[in-house]
Length: 222
Image 1 (cartoon, helix red, strand yellow):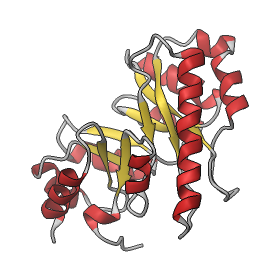
Image 2 (cartoon, one colour):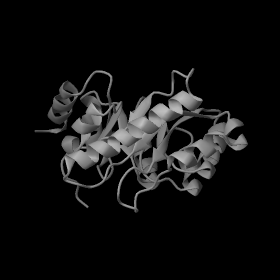
Image 3 (cartoon, helix red, strand yellow):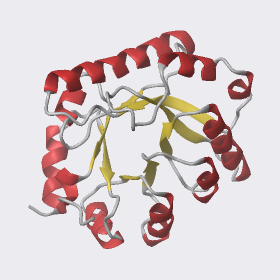
Image 4 (cartoon, helix red, strand yellow):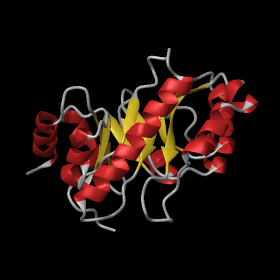
């Protein structure tokens, strides 16, 4: 199947309220154009340099999501156009996003990234760190960011029960933050979890946004 067929198959299989983020890292702009012509509008990248290179080559109505670990000194390169940052894992990073959004007179939507996997190499907050961030004076003073949900990555595992438990943890984190800090905020609604190998489990556990690359574009040439 080609990219258009893959997208059609995926979109037919996803519930209507689940957003599809096409993970386009390491794919050339020409392939992204094929996906765009097939109706895809949300693309996820995890390297700032690659994203900055692709963005001018593609239509302006694309929603670019940053899904990888983001260094504070790289935020300035994407602050003028990024739609959603999935990987907020510190107050300092959020402060820099707010600064760069302010420079461009924008409000940038953000997700808090949680560490839910067994691998220590993955980034993310724990629940207490997230609470400390959301209760801090620095966060409360920010006017150019909007936290709209949470993100997490499961363990790289063939055990579906383990993956399901980890996704359930993230859903519970979302519900906890919603009740404590965002009860009257309709925009706090996203749970970004699930990739090609585990998105069906993620959806069953409450995902509203899946990040899928291989099932759309095929295996990448590293």
